[in-house]
Image 1 (tube, rainbow, N blue to C red):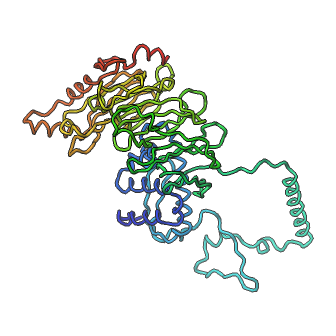
Image 2: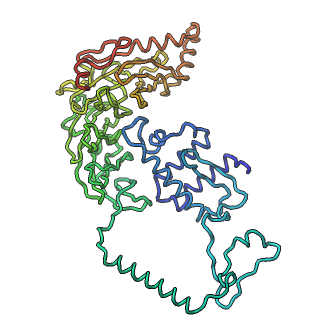
Image 3: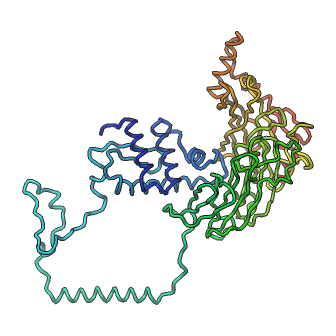
Length: 526
């Protein structure tokens, strides 16, 4: 079968996305565009549940979210594509499909329109109108297809005697009446109401959607609805709650607020992301507004109930607040950070205790990438910043994190001091190994993948790996200075030697083989 050109494939993809079948399925459109464009661009081999969750649902790889919802969305997408090609897409000459067990789109060029292919089920015998003879098949077309067609029973076995026909008809009617009577007099349970499966928004209106994309309820809120939203059964009653944030995108307007709704649309609580009277930074430019940056749910204390985890950042600058909220809307923890967090995940420490791992930057200590492990039971206070820094939160005690690491800036990034490097992605393995990916302005002031720092479950640094763009930047830097080609093994070792760990009152170098856990935090994780 001939391959379709990329232009034709893109037109076919856009036709599906603009179709009536996908008009109200916003999230499925986003998933299809993500998978389809990745396949057209040759990036589909790298596409995974985590990648789709990041690109479509706004969650960074390694998020605490359970990625099963990505698989469910792709399964729904396969069904929606089948509906499209059985209806308005029947005339398409390129069929898009997503084979089971993969996240790759297949663009198949057809020799006849998609709707011309036979259906999967056996065709029904449709009797001709009364008074008309059934059409006869030309002799030249009689073959296996004709033999496979069901023949009238009379032609095969002769006519059924009339008394036998009426007897069987009476038995059938009796069985139907008996089943109907049993169903009518049997105890009936309550009707199963459809619960939210997805959400959408338009301005300050939030919509809860069913599996078919139908609107279950709509809620008009005071400000614009943030695109990151959450559907999770917070109170373990079998029905999911919907959590969404509001906040205007114009600086100075509408502080962000986190709202929670029951599955029927009743609001059960709201929590300000950063009330103006509680912002601990003295610099007036940090007064607000604060908006939602990340949203997730996880059972951190092992009680079987999910808690809401929200990261709120200043609308223009970098101070950040991490909130931990239970199902009733009670604020369980509030941690203020002198920088921004770009990613978070839940990790399990050697003794089995869970911790919230956040990756980002620390503007109050050299504008460097940072990794913070927060204890769910001690998620309060402020992060470390240099004394007198505008990023030093006032009136709050220093937090007691399980561990806090500052990562070094690479030499090529030092040319762009005004651009802050940060930890942008977190990956974790089943054995507890964590990989922290830093992003830095190493070429043309654009943030690029820089260094991967690998730590084991005990928070020991196992090593570093340089990205290809960073290696190129180091080589260009050496040529510019007239120096020999860099020894990348030594570069990696030097970077590892510059990692610093917080020891309660200051940062000190993390020695080779040393754990980032303090004796006190190590005791808490047992």
